[in-house]
Length: 229
Length: 71
Image (cartoon, rainbow over all chains, first blue to last red; front, top):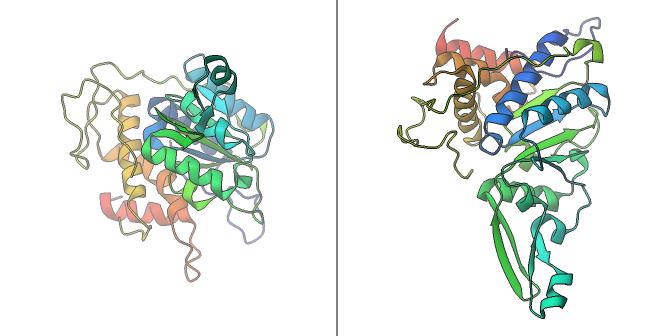
């Protein structure tokens, strides 16, 4: 299952070969399945891959596992603050004659996954906003004479198209994302067409951990997630 | 875990990922096998680069996991 996910490099003289492509793809599917279990608790995934069929297939697989609807939202790197965090709803404000708040993309993604293409180019400011939202599981704003807060428990999917010499993904995000996948060395023929068949967790399944005593055994919800600090 | 990672997010991530994996596997409790399976993908990008140790990050995690849980 999850074996070496180290950057796979082409076999070369004196350079150790990376993990087998089938193994890398198998790990990618495994991470995909975990994301659907607890995206917010895990933070998300840093996916290193160029735009192409391999990444598209992985994303299509993830979409098929997520609930239908707005479970996966795309966040442009140049998104404005009021669209990201929320802001004044101008049309509603003018119509009603009093300030009306409008949710941003992060609040709209509550319970789902936010996809950031070219995440390596994300500004430090937006990376910080995403990190803060991942930590606090809520988002909001205080400006224009109005303030509002909404829950925002989402997982982050950071697509990184950069090479070895390019600017890396912001460390503040990398630290908060559970996994890093590197699909750059894969071609489409390395990717199996079918997703593995996972046994769906039953409603009575409440995994406990000897390493974590924070979850009560009788918790009615699963998976239990807590705010990242 | 003796890997020298900064902060506790690595360990917390291992716990959360192992719990999610246990749920996928239909296991009622997290065990050593889940910890071993999630350790590498969850920790290897958190290691500090050591100029005196050119060992691959996955191999370093594998080495520490083996020391903890046995071969």
